[in-house]
Image (tube, rainbow, N blue to C red; front, side, top):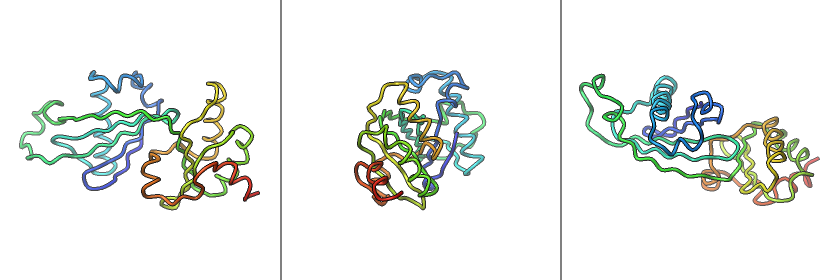
Length: 198
């Protein structure tokens, strides 16, 4: 689980599928109102308070984006409310009035801390990738986005394993990159990178 502060009232939490499995939660459970999911949310809020000083004592909007290979991105936005004097006496439902939005995405987004790693990956997967992919630069890092990966399950898992050797699953969505990032290659990124960089 990784926590990142976006602004004063918003954080992003990245959950891997391993984080969910450790807690006995299936991907589809995130859509349900069950105690294990409540416990996970409490753990996320505890970690957010410890790591970035983000506290919640009122309504929150929770957006959950399910990514096919990487896990889930949870964005928590704090709403405006009156402070509770007896916060310790409140139970979960009193503290968190959640409004949950769920979205599933087939996008595969990987981040690379060095442009050379992106180039090396492109050469490694060039034969496996027929076309597609966009590359972005954002905050000193490089991102590779595939909107659809049309591979059989075993090939898909191998593809993700190779991506993970050179980069790591990103908590950013393609929408953030399209809005705030700089386009390096807008389409067929793997083929273009291989063509221009040896």
